[in-house]
Image (tube, rainbow, N blue to C red):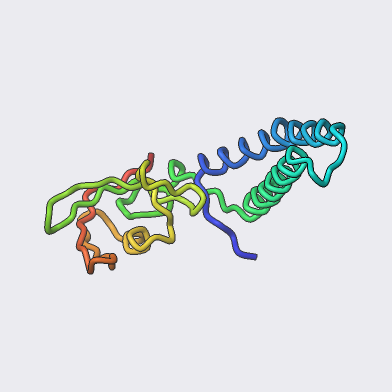
Length: 158
């Protein structure tokens, strides 16, 4: 069975969402269905159909999260010795060698990726090019506009 890498924070976020779905959202939608049933004819009852659709979404998301958590390989980057090498969970400062633009990314699991928060998926082209390299290395990344070279400035375990 394939394990999916996940940061400690990513696992906590999924567990929190699962808890909310099971203890708040699921009971609320069940109550909405019961209330809509009391309104009579279910064929033309939009509230009932909307609540049932919402219930389907919630149950699907619960199964999805439980599956991800059961196959998660939680990696705590803070517990791994810092060697200057880019690893899953590390935060990497890179510099575009042509423009001198610097950017910092944290390499995370697919569910945790959020480019606006500078968290990139381990499966992204940039992350795949960076993992295993060290501070000072230059990596070439294939992007839609061509190949971009980045120098790894700093690797942090935060």
